[in-house]
Length: 76
Image (cartoon, rainbow, N blue to C red; front, side, top):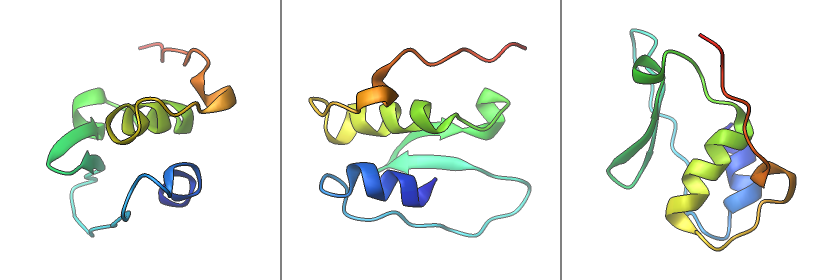
């Protein structure tokens, strides 16, 4: 996911940092804002979903091509 974000948004983000944690923590933050939290959402994001969330903060006008299509909602 980190590589995909860098490939897609590399000109608009400064870095992607992976910080080791424990207890199955998976959070994606932009600056100090949590844009995805596995514990809160109950799942990992789809890649296109994550790209949209990060893009909406760092480069709102950027078109993502096929990743801009509607994300299927997970069934619970």
